[in-house]
Image (tube, rainbow, N blue to C red; front, side):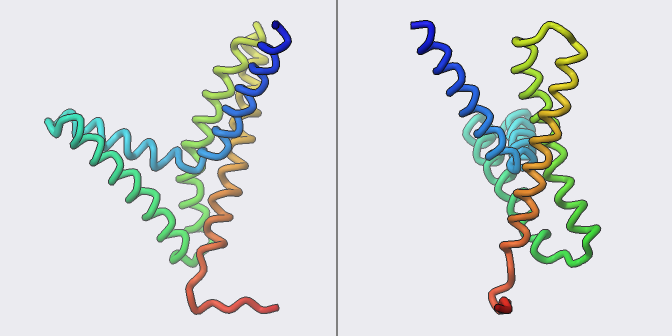
Length: 146
């Protein structure tokens, strides 16, 4: 019975890591949506209005990022947009990794080391996904050379 518990624990950790790496790109829109939703709720919009405002804000943030990645031509501009999406993902990766390793190792130094490694891994993955989304957004009249 203990063996099944260990296997299920590994499966749960693997699933959560996969989820973290998959959703890391959406950390900035999520943050913007939650912030706008909390602001709307604080101004008296009610919980339904806050949810709607939050979803609209998150969608607009993601859509604006996609639009800017598709239209901005200078490399430095595209890099700044990508960094804006990657920075919240790095922070989320650090805290997610720290939440896992603080239960597995007693040393604060090693917890920090592994948390930084996890943050870098999530950041690199988010950067690859953001730049991959930018590469697939080509104009309709674009013809690739074979």
